Length: 222
Image 1 (cartoon, helix red, strand yellow):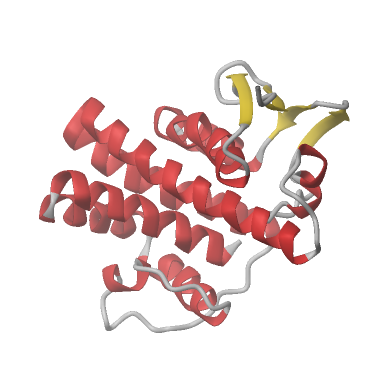
Image 2 (spheres, rainbow, N blue to C red):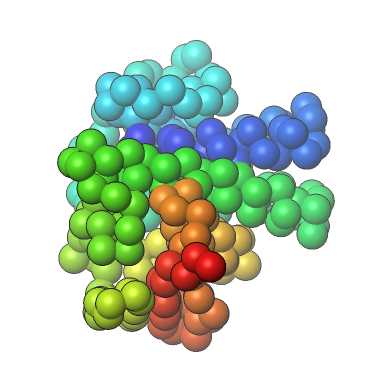
């Protein structure tokens, strides 16, 4: 989770800098500051140890000790949500709809990169990037912090989430308007990165309707 968190930050940071230049970088830094330098340093150090090349570290003052914090699983998931929420808030509060689009674009590129990684994992095992091999090669373990049901059909996967640690964290923090920017983009983007013919229906969200419902299907090629 640490490397995925640092990767998400890196993609969003790149997008807001592309959109807003130096001001975008300052806003990303403001989000890191509000998140907390000690917590950010922990993510930065652990992600680097896991081999992740990221930009989070450049927003942490040099006098912040490079140490690892002892954290449980719920805390780790919650902090991914918190860091994203603070950065998104800084950008959106300054730039409004343009800020939302920049954050969404960062989530899109992050998701597509993850999807390509899932396809590469499947290929390494000699598997095609078909619907049958998507969830079995997924890159984020579904912990007990998620409550969901998954149904497999010949051409469709249906998933229903009734509990999500990301959505819960944003709800607890009153950051739903920023967290939804992640929710709207992430699963369709991962699926497209995995296979460009993947289609995802996702019109209900834990943050809004109290449940996330997905239908994953591969478009039939003519």
